[in-house]
Amino acid sequence: MDHQETAVAQPRSIGNLRMVWDYASRYPTVIAGALISLIVAASATLAIPNGFRLVIDRGFAQSGGDIGRWFEYLLAIVSVLALATASRFYFVSWLGERVVADIRSAVVNNLLRLSPSYFEINRPAEVASRLTADTTLIEQAVGTTASVALRNLVLAIGGILYLFTLAPKLTAMLLVGIPLTLGPILFIGRRLRDMSRKSQDRIADVGVIVDEVLGAMKIVQAFGQEQREGERFSSAVEGAFQTARGRIRTRAILTAILIFMIFGAITFIMWQGALDVQAGKMTGGSIAAFVLTGGFVAGAFGALTEVYGDLVRSSGAAQRLSELLHEQPGIAAPAHPKPLPEPAQGRVAFDKVTFRYPTRTEVHALADFSLDIAPGETVAVVGPSGAGKSTLFQLIQRFYDPEAGTIRVDGVALPEADPAAVRARIAMVPQETVIFAASARDNLRYGRWDASDDQLWAAAESANAAEFLRKLPQGLDTFMGEGGARLSGGQRQRLAIARAILRNAPILLLDEATSALDAESERLVQDALDHLMADRTTIVIAHRLATVRAADRIIVMEDGRIVEEGRHDSLVAAGGLYARLARLQFDG
Image (cartoon, rainbow, N blue to C red):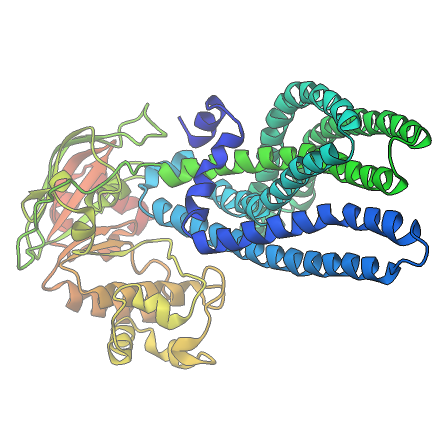
């Protein structure tokens, strides 16, 4: 079950924001500053009606009174309010940014622990969308919504207490109307939570389509599919809009009901207050203060209903991020990993291994597969597409665990070892080269992060990459662009080979490492690889049989099994699958 399905099955409420609080509570000083500023600002706001009461009752009502004194008092309150509000804004905004930064880092660090099988089921583009869109909602909740909610809560409670001191009877009437607002909140709020979650799903769908289409723009344009992709995107946008419209309509209805009920109740109470002033039971200043404070209280309750919807959306975001944060890796180091022998040997052994990919359980990628590769041996693996060649590389690096059988590196079963220790003994050159959007230096250093410039250039020379790297505008500091967009296919492949050379690992995995090179570059790089492979165990996945004639052993695979084994000449003479593949390539 993927994380989306799990999320839907879990209860949804603002209680999911507990995860956010766990991160925010790491900064108690900032929280204290924000709370103090909030309380001072709310208190100053509530003091303003009392200032007006004093101006009216003691300034205007008393002839010859020092009216300026009361306006100075009111001005002092406003000054305190301004400073406290600015302070509150700084603290809560800082806290929101800090919490989001911490959550993003924690989620990504956990995602980096997960095995590739997780990302077969959960699309990386969708995960990235959650990491951006959902954390934005969290930032809004911490940096704005929670602060507004607390501020209005303080205003509501403090305002009611002050109203009791002014007119207990009118305040009691006001409080009778407040519980009537809870029914719509509970009834409509539940629907609002569901709609908020669906709205987030539709927004994520839009992000996934954008990421997918922009990442394959050359293919889209090459096949003339711009209009269809535009229509698909428009359809997703329209779906997101329709879902959002339903949520907005529900929230608008909730807001209208609450505002009518709250302000209708206040209007009725003010009417009663005016009658009390006429009867001499209240002063003009008191009724003015009551009206102003009542407005603050009504506004506070109205704002609370609005921020509740924002908190619900943020809670849904927190739930999804929490799922990513607490996802456990399918491949993990044992509590007490068995150390690999030193010095490294480079022996690899498959013993009756059976494996099916999680997303293709109906087909065996490997079936009762056994293979023993001696230290320093070069083994080529050939066979038709889908034979299970690439699966060997996936299992050797322990990206997956087999259903049955055992894989050993240097005599240690992979589940008994630390996966990081196993992978440290392996250098990989994939057929589809991965170049990061970083400098050439950082892309090379991926093989060995502490390598010096001299070591980087030596590896580049061995891979025939030094010449074009020196011609780059800033040399090794040149930005490679998204996916190595500034390099040709052959240059990207040579950079990947240099990265593998720099790793200096005892086991080399080469997935047709020279496939993207021209004839001259292929010869130079093959010479470098031949020298490099001399003292290392090398497994080569070969699509072009001309590149594996010199291998110590050729393994021919079909349907996840070894069907032939030997050297090039003997396999051709045997007249089996290898001979048929050879005829297709050499005679075709």
